[in-house]
Amino acid sequence: MVKNLSKGFLPLLLIINLSCDKDIRLDLPPTDIRPVVFGMAQTDKPVDLIVYKSYPLLEYTDTLDQNIVTDISLFVNGNFQEILTYRNKHYYSSYLPKTQDNLKISFNWQSIEISAESIIPNKIKIDSILFVKRTFDNQRVFNVYFADDIRFKNYYAITADYNYIEYTENKNAYLTTTSSSPLVGNEEDMSNYYDYQSLLFSDALFNGLSLNLNINIYAPYLNEDEAFVGVKLYLSNITEDYYNYVKTFLKNQRAQTPSFFFGDLEYINVHSNIKNGYGLFKTFSLDSVDISQPLRNK
Image (cartoon, rainbow, N blue to C red; front, side, top):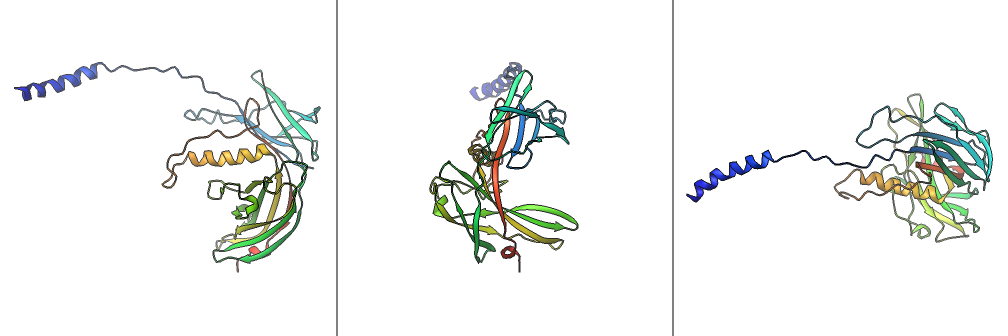
């Protein structure tokens, strides 16, 4: 008797539950749409900016991903310099920045001031570079010699830029650059992150010293339709904002793509120096040297 009752009761319970279903509407806060600014400035080259709208992650349309056309002011060391020229969806300055210039870009969007401010760091020269050896896994080991400027807290990026020809088209790519030197032992190894381009480090362990930094560079892999042109090594003196942006961007990219090894990672905010907006206004200085010969595959 109890068994028969239970068999009849369960369908009735399901019917009751189904009849109680209601649509629940949640009033979510409005999406925080702001301008996205990506800009760069270095010594003796025009300031270069692009500005476009951000968009809700789940509501992307081509109409939202568009450039913002407006008047962008450039201030140099606190003084108004010019309105940037808009050309081919970029904004350019006529003014050519100098080291230690304090640059500010500013414009109004929906009655809100969007701005960013950054100083051009001093140029740190590569005194010399020495090829050490070729390893079994096709890496090239170099010693890079340069002197840190004791007057400032410095942040650096070392980048190996590979130039090659595919059929008749000239192309560039980055070669993975790492270091196991104790001089940068305080830095996290980010060479296996997506979009990794440069070895980033601060002068926390060698402030004001002349140093010999040991680095490893993976040689380029050439397909049959590709021809080697050359490789340049760049030593960039970058700002703290630039340094923090790259590190948080790489971690955010990894968090968006769970993997077998890392699982689901917690999202982190990408660092930005754009007031009331997103993105980065990066300023830097750089020096370069040709290192093509040791990186030719033989």
